[in-house]
Image 1 (cartoon, rainbow, N blue to C red):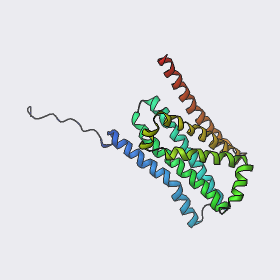
Image 2 (image 1 turned 90 degrees about the horizontal axis):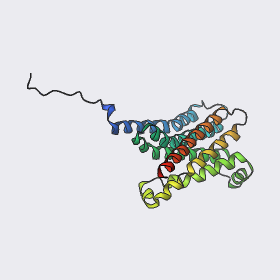
Image 3 (image 1 turned 135 degrees about the horizontal axis):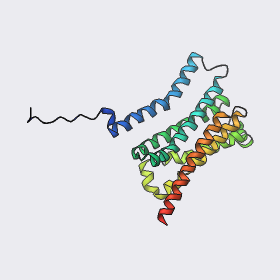
Image 4 (image 1 turned 180 degrees about the vertical axis):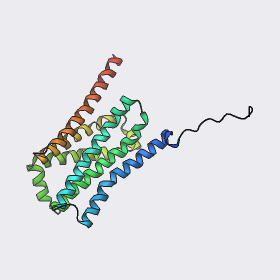
Length: 214
């Protein structure tokens, strides 16, 4: 008994940092694909209401903004919590934001306008909420393309400057949402306050870094 090795309690499966990230990535995949699965089921089962096209466009636009804000929240959360591994979720969150933005736009262009390019172009030029949303989508394209490790290496410090466009895309997305809903502005305002808070944290961190450097 005295010579037997003392057994140390094993860490739980969930306590492993790599497994924590794996579980979070699985959760992001489930949440990210969930709206599309739900909307697809709604089309076949007919529970999307009297105007299913508008419902699809609205849901996909809302989830675009959710994932875009979640992407922008990764760095502030890492800095405030000190949990550096969370940075591994940023690319996946950003790609899901772009995915939902594409579904949102294609639903609008295909289901609402049947890809009539002239009508879509008129909409983009004449309706300010469409202009804001389309500009946000265009800005997200280079962010999605350059999200790989290869592009991060190629661009170096320029990669960080380029990906600051995510804040511009987020701001335009909030404007798009706010101008679209007109009267029911609660959730657009929540998104605006959240985005402003994340930007304020970023500015505060940059200010601290400059003071240390000086």
